[in-house]
Length: 101
Image (cartoon, rainbow, N blue to C red; front, side, top):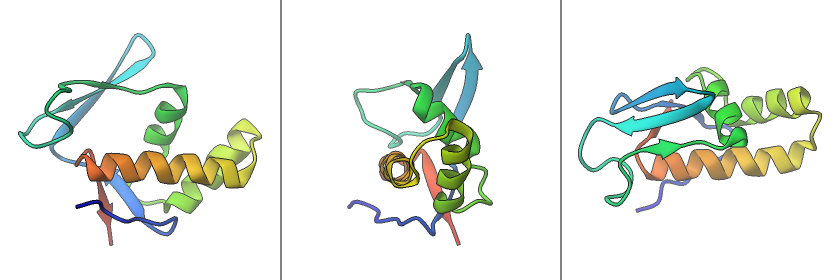
């Protein structure tokens, strides 16, 4: 079942994963069975994913994360909002992120 989230959602890193920055890459390692895809043991994030991941602090809404990144990268807000929503939605679906009330 796919988790539906919107820009008002607040997302935080799951306690079932560990993330480490190694040589300017962020690696995400699931600690529990059933996290992510069975075919993938490690996740690496591209530059966009890294920026979003680092801004997800469990306090900011996805809309606030998008606004922060749009200002930081001088990028169009609607495009950044789509990227943030897609990224967060996929990681919530995989159990790497959780939503907070």
